[in-house]
Image (cartoon, rainbow, N blue to C red; front, side, top):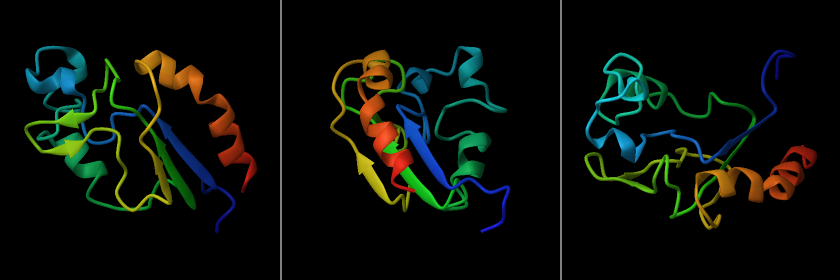
Length: 114
C-alpha cells in the first residue's frame, strides 16, 4: 500500500449509486454532468472501477433515508451500496441525518479495526 492511499473508507448514507431525489433530475445535485442520477456519466464513471476507495471499504445505510433513499428505480440498485465492499450495514435506522449521527460508534469501531 502506498503512503498516500486510504486505509479505511466508510460511506455513511452515501449516494454511491444514485439519490432517489434525482428520479426527476431537476436540481443541481441531479446535474447531467456530475449529478446523482444513476444513468448519468459521473456515477457510471465512479462505479466502473471497483475497490478504488481504500484498502478496507464499508457502507452504512438504511431503508428510511429521506435524502439518498434506499432503492433506485430506474437502475434497480441500492443507492448507498458499494460493489465488492468488505462489509455492508444496511440496517441503520432513521432518516438520513439520523443515520449519519446514529452510527458514530460503528464508524469509530470500523476505523479503529485497521
